[in-house]
Image (cartoon, rainbow, N blue to C red; front, side, top):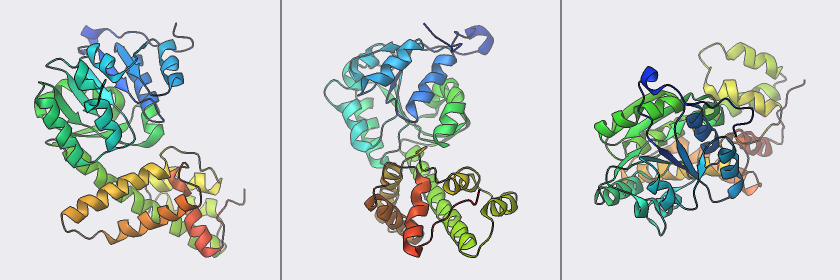
Length: 315
């Protein structure tokens, strides 16, 4: 029973979509709304998650539940994974009871997590030996983009496989770009995270300067939000900082993981990333103060402690 949701199967001919059976593994902050959007679009969906409540929620909306990643693969033509880190994806895909154990030739594994490009290429090689295709397709846009189906999707892998999966990506996102071979999607996502983290650091410093100088922070955002300083971080996260709303759309702990991956990739290329190193250390301070499970906007708390000054809206 679909409750208050109107998740009706779309007319496949009218929409030009081949409604291949999908699997979805990982129903967290991002994965759950993404899976819901696939159901809403009419895709047959089998879901798996380590904890059961998100699975039950998706079953109530029309999905089928599975007892293992292997079972998801057995029921699906395309399996999407949305997991926290490289070891999680390796375990789910390559481990006992994993996706490859239930895979048949022609299955496509689409990893939408953010993980190591090197691990991504290793998974692609192992899958290819079983006749299974893979795409790395990490996303940007936070929980809001996941809910609204407006994510940016950066995809690595064979072009033909990308084109087969494009209708699925179009349900989940608006800016979908094939960026290269296996691992290229993950590399582009790490570049995205570097830009996001440093932009957020700039937003925090601007707020700190304005607050310490006695400027009305609501008016500050109004003044600079329509000019050259405008960014997703300024428009979406700065208001949360002023309200002391540190609930996660994307967690500090996961941003730290992404920055570690970016710094590791840079080290392999003998490339200095000084700004990334600084913001990584500031997030380490935020983690030390118990903010690892909070949203990335909690970066402001690290600067506040250093300055002994708290930023908050007068309203």
